[in-house]
Image (cartoon, rainbow, N blue to C red; front, side, top):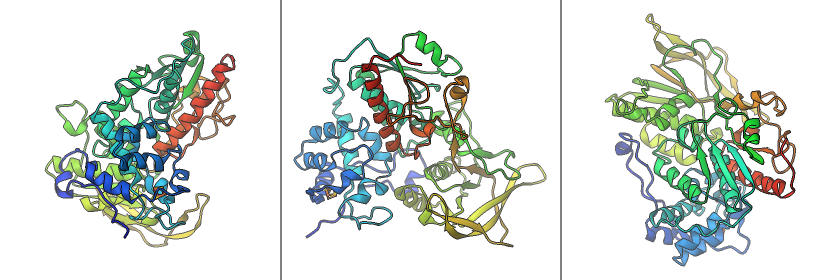
Length: 478
Ligand code: SF4
């Protein structure tokens, strides 16, 4: 008889909304073994086809079944440098779990029945952290010390490149504009989904592999690519991310208490504003908060806002407005489920029209229009169509706009020979993600990636292979 799926324990919703501690516990050993034993060890493991970096999922699960947790960890690391991160934030329900043979093939996302591959990956990653398996790094090969590679940006793509190059023994220096490494993993994902210590562990692992990190250094301002070339760097990777928030372009967006999700989350996640005044960065909150958007960023911002309300003794509500229905929401199913449990309200088929202020110029409400779903657009999702004469308003003291991010042009505008498209994204010229500048590779959101951590990491692996090939060819950069 088929065993029931094993879900790890979670902190209760009423308890967890009072702090920023992690929501989902890791599997106990007994839970991990039970879940691993549900895996059919398929002859043709479809799950692997769903993993963007091609982890041998069947094999790492087999190691867990055999209680060889070290083996499981290093099996994952052959393809993915960050098991503890991906085990927490990968949208597995749209990837490996969706293609798992236990899921109904063709379903839009994984059902409960599918193996909880991500929780098993986290179990192996956390086992490595608890047992400090990073000491003695078994996988770094002696490489050519004559090459030096500059990685610009320490988000998932940059970290992935650094890990792959370090594995080849190539000296790699990561330049980060902020005062802490991690990019969007640090400033974008709240600690209740990805604790800072987990990120620190994975970054320290890279340091032990020989990767150097230079913080507070904006390439394109503090130094140019030309400066780095003069310093002896032989190849470059640009993992600049997408740090410029998009806005709705409607009246009232400049009112006080209208944040971009990027700013709101950065204040809280990176600058610890939830611990103000112990930490010096403040963040505003209100009794009625509205978040606009349907991705993970919108759900994260809403859950952060709810926690801030509770920490400050406010009993208010947080609502998410989305133009389509729940089915079209790009956010992870697990996060939507958690948000609902915590009391976040979802208002579907609603489009903001105007942000309105009271007589004191304080944000007071959002005028909205109702929508219905029309024909599919280029993304394949059904387009929202505004319903005539459907205007209504929602009271709101703080609004967070989470409708996407665009390319940061600080570096690209400082290098005119670096080709970009009209959205400011770097144009890619070959299968190894080389840009228009010889020896300069790019990946992640800055080349228009899908915006998932694992996709950025996958691009990082491809670019690292290209960089290694470029260095071995003896070519010189631009
Ligand atoms: S497809 Fe599912 S059941 Fe089969 S090996 Fe992969 S995880 Fe196990």
